[in-house]
Image 1 (tube, one colour):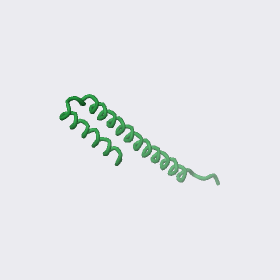
Image 2 (cartoon, one colour; image 1 turned 135 degrees about the vertical axis):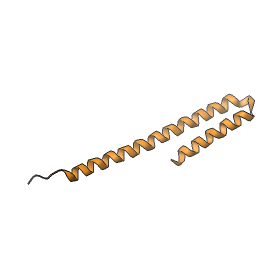
Image 3 (cartoon, one colour; image 1 turned 30 degrees about the vertical axis):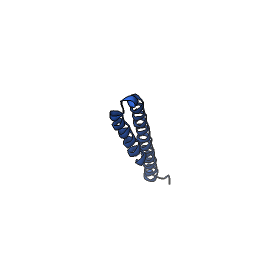
Length: 70
C-alpha cells in the first residue's frame, strides 16, 4: 500500500509541475498518467493477494469443520 501512496504522490507532483511548465505540459501529464496506472496495478495486486489469502483461510476452515469418517 505504501507504493500506491508514492505513485499517487508522484502523479500529483507531475500534474502540479505541468501547471507551471507550459512547454513540458504534455510530457508531465503523460508521466502522471503512468504513475496513476502503476498505482492501480499495485492496488489490484494488493487486493488480489488479500482475496487469495482469504480464500485459503476459508478452505482451511472448511477442512477443519468437515466430519471425519469413523
